[in-house]
Length: 399
Image 1 (cartoon, rainbow, N blue to C red):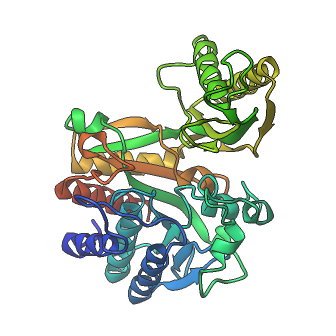
Image 2 (cartoon, rainbow, N blue to C red; image 1 turned 30 degrees about the horizontal axis):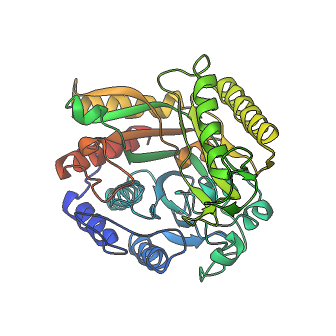
Image 3 (spheres, helix red, strand yellow; image 1 turned 180 degrees about the vertical axis):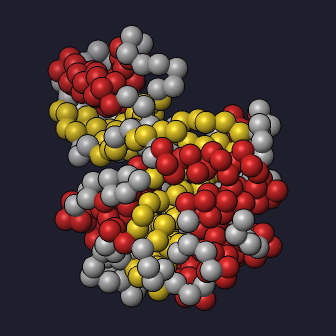
């Protein structure tokens, strides 16, 4: 097996956490294009150079460490949620870096490394890899804005050393991404590794309902065009109508709500909210979209609200490549016989976009308590090292 160095790997992982370290435990605040994110990417680029890789920062700020020959690409992302943990994305980048170093030191197969930008969706859905793969045009991405009204074009201009060119995907033979599970299954079942067989699809858009702002004390309940009540009715309607469409694995979330004017003595006149839904079946995602739009239109028509929908963002469900997945399975069985499972990913990953360009596969390590996208996110270090060993074994086998 490739001679990976667990101590070096863990030291780099902890060093990356220092950029934006916050909160309790091992929390991280490192949103895309923040000062902490840019500093982390600058540090990553230097570590890639030290490993003998050629650094390329693409137009959106994704950082590649390129091997000289046709290579296997590995990595993930290093930006975080507004309140995130130290492993989400970062683990995949640092594990890839360690395997690339070990392979180069041992004269093994060439490995390239990437940290994609804005995977966590400050502006869209896995924005950096979406643009690279062609799932999202750069022109359309530049028009996206975050919750504070900052545009993607403005944010990416902060990244120094950007190239005007994207990396040619033809130089890569495939893509492997290591990640924490972000769910409770492996931890609950005392299993060491999950080999991903498929990644769910996702849809994401904003919905706006505009009614009438008015005095909270003198406006009778009958006849109010209260934007919050419209949102409440919409939420109830979709839950009822999804019942005959969804499965226990289907999820949907209203995760961000902006109520205007957001004051206790004013009937709110406008609400804008995010609507996101995920499932492994593309047809079901489409049926859910029809229910969402129909429910919003019904609420608007019956209550006298103006309705508008933001752009639809999303990715299709993706099956993992059989050859790459097989290499991960064999390496896992050799490392932790009987203590692993095949499993789907309910979370979205850059591998979904990259699958448009090349074969992809993923492996998971346990998340303690199933916690992620929170300061409490963590994985036992022996489990991190086990995942690193599996990744190295798969790379050696793929040769």
